[in-house]
Image 1 (cartoon, rainbow, N blue to C red):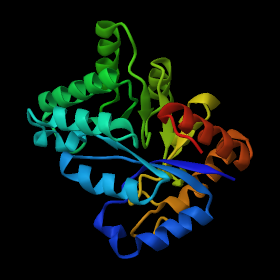
Image 2: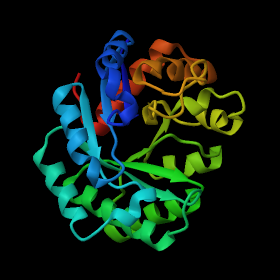
Image 3: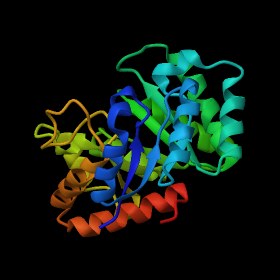
Image 4: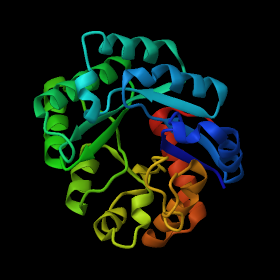
Length: 261
């Protein structure tokens, strides 16, 4: 069984002592490709180094909404240069809006829209972070589609929205990626969203080192090898086999990010 973890953060210090062992475990667990996301420009070099060290890792470059204050006139050029010069860059992000932890609304909007423009210029998918901001993210994407005459394409990562919100983004052509939160006992809203996502728009991720899935939730660090627990939960909620979930989500990840196995 092959799996693709579409959102990881392996450059964090938590992985430094034993990354080789972590890699061995994800290989044993059937994780054949990983997409490493990015939160701010200071990470570009370390993420690129990981991707060059481990050929199964592709990566995205971008600025997280909670790091929007780090955006400056050089940031867009840095993103464009790396994304156009390194073939292992497969997306722009993570980007989006986070109104749970920050209220610098105008700055977040500006950085989000600037990165949508870069992704469009480079014909790359976007990885969208959306927390307590689904209506606002929807409006930005609708506005972009109307002004550009084409939709942005990408994934709503670590999705935690209601079924109604899920449908908004499916209607906009986005993939929906579920993380370890879908395994939590009280995550009824997220679990309800799982069943409405069409098979061709479904993705899975760990978002490691965050959000370790049940039964690993008590551990301080999540890791890619735990992706199977998320696949198992989706299979249970959708009435499908784990093998079917693995095959479909792997295919979808390759389609969205242009990955080859």
